[in-house]
Amino acid sequence: MVARVIPVEEFDLVIFGGTGDLARRKILPGLFRRYRSGQMPEGARIIGAARSDMSADEYRQMIAEAVAEFGGEESADKDGLDGFLRNLDYVPIDAKGTGGWDALAAKVRQDVVQAFYFSVAPSLFGDLAERLHTNRIANSESRIVVEKPFGRDLESARALNGTLAEHFDESQIYRIDHYLGKETVQNLMAVRFGNVLFEPLWNNHYLDHIQITVAETVGVGGRGAYYDKSGAMRDMVQNHLMQLLCLIAMEPPSKFGADAVRDEKLKVIRALEPVDSHHIVRGQYDESSDGPSYREDVENPRSFTESFIAMRCHISNWRWAGVPFYLRTGKRMKGRSSEIAVVFKDLGHSIFEGDEARHRNILAIRLQPNEGMDLQVTIKEPGPGGMRLVDVPLDMTFADALGDHEIEEADAYERLIMDVIRGNQTLFMRGDEVEAAWQWTDPLIAGWEARNDVPKHYEAGSAGPEDAMMLMHRDGRRWREIKG
Ligand code: NAP
Image (cartoon, rainbow, N blue to C red):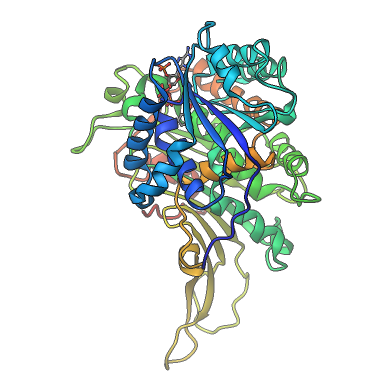
């Protein structure tokens, strides 16, 4: 099956930080794939901008190497790559100085869609926003794209929003959370709101609980200095896990439009109850035969920062009263697996004699690896021997069901960048959402910082600290196995 692509208007996309890790690993290889799929119009231009002094040809060479390394199988298409590279340009620029801004002004067209990707440290956002205006490069239609982390608490997020708002209207600001660009996450909305099957059951009458797990096998790697100031709560829960929770829990928006969807997500965040410390488990990974401990990784022997967190949350509204949401994320875990599991209630009474087992329907939405969904249903075990029941998954692996669509992580960036060019903000976080999320997480973080809360140790390659298991066991539930 061939993917149907919707072409976008001609555009100039300036990537500040165009020589950085994110640009080379995700943004440019992603754009190359969009080019190959025919989605990039003739005349679209991508302009890298960073301090490094290099010519446009040297930049093209750098990006050719990045695409070869990170672009997947498609990077073998040399003609395609040459065509893509012809759309690339480069301007040496200093976000904090004056150098390069005239050259950029001369290159960026005013009569096409303009997007400016701030793939730089957040401390440079204000400088970039201001210079784009004083040099008359941006206009009232321009779009800017900003990356996480969006602040480290409510105060800094407000300050960042304020800085951007001095120069850009909210309708021009695209705050990326790449989890929202994932195929499965968007499919979650299609499944919920495009079928008659699920929405009538999507409430506390039929659902027992919801689990969201984002498990990584890697440690903090080279990001130790940043990560140790952040931790799993700021790095993962405040943004990615909360966004997933919002999409699962939100009321049906009136339409699939930016403000309709974001209004509903905001209501979920505002309805989140404070979590008491008994319902949060923080952990740090120990050293193992194949890697150092967390504290060695971040070179801080007295670090109290968490590389793992598990928590039980409640949403205070009619739909979700009494339905716990269990969130769990960590590094150096036993598998690389992200999954949302919607666990239905027990039947309550079985009409099948001798059937002692507890049968539950579970809708499992896999974000990675192997994006797809499966719905666990109870059927009769085939064959003679009477009426024995067995639980089986109805597997909807998208790659199998939909043919040769390429579904992989980098797609999230590609899709989101194309949404920027189309002017569609639905899958981007609005400023008030980000602030509300910090408003909920700030007191939790402040609480454990104030009492010097010591994270529990967990074995690298495990499912996290024992206490995280107990968090569920105490409620008579258990985490789903981490595969992958
Ligand atoms: P990086 O590898 O350190 O790259 C930073 C880029 O900014 C480089 O191109 C650098 O080039 C440029 N730069 C630094 N100072 C500058 C200045 N004064 N003027 C103009 N350009 C300047 O960082 P990154 O990993 O790509 O991350 C970029 C942003 O994305 C950060 O906000 C990060 O938190 C976020 N992010 C990254 C990832 C990831 O996977 N890497 C994931 C999520 C979010 P020069 O040194 O040549 O100026």
